[in-house]
Image 1 (cartoon, helix red, strand yellow):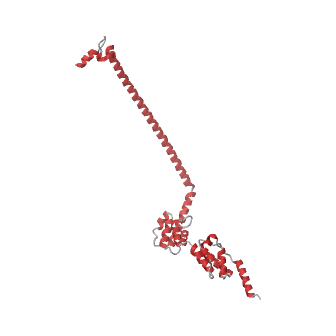
Image 2: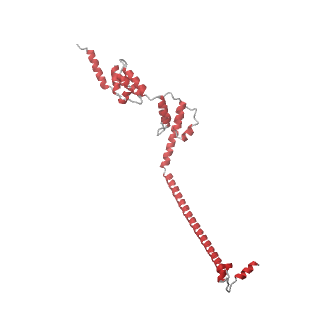
Length: 276
């Protein structure tokens, strides 16, 4: 004869299994995932170790199953759920060293308010990073002008400094929006650009004119020099021709070696004058 109480328990467990809502496994936050899973177990009245174990494994993908392959292939006789839970948290959790490295190398302010960014850093840092280091990391990510304002508040609580940073951030954002939206500033900038363009054009024209004038002056000097040299060469040639015309054919051709002389010829008289 069947036990009616056992039948009732089976029916209750079946109903509970239909009601439980288990989210997919969170590989980056396994502790939070198990906390939510156990809340669902409580709501649904699930207490059996084997049932919890089965639910937990059903939400893991192939990569996560491989992380606890030794536990899955050789589960213990008792406390299977707790064994899987402990193995997943230990092997899948991001270490504190990795969190700190992420703080140092990867995180930026972005479009968050300074106080939001501080809370984000605190979440990543956990409890092992002191406020002094957190303050340094946080301030180092803020805009330079904001850092200069907040640098004097070294003794104030970090949350209070973050509130002041939010106010500075809000004022700066409004100023940027106002400057961007003001048509006068845009028109003023365009006017300056036009003025500079005209000045550059004027200077370019002036330089071209000066260069042209210098080239013309240089050409004029060269022409004058050429004419002067031509005149000098012509004069020397004329003097030489005049001198040669005073000598007879023989002395013009043979010079001192000439043995004949025809008149008129001044060669001998010039030679005699030069010897005195």
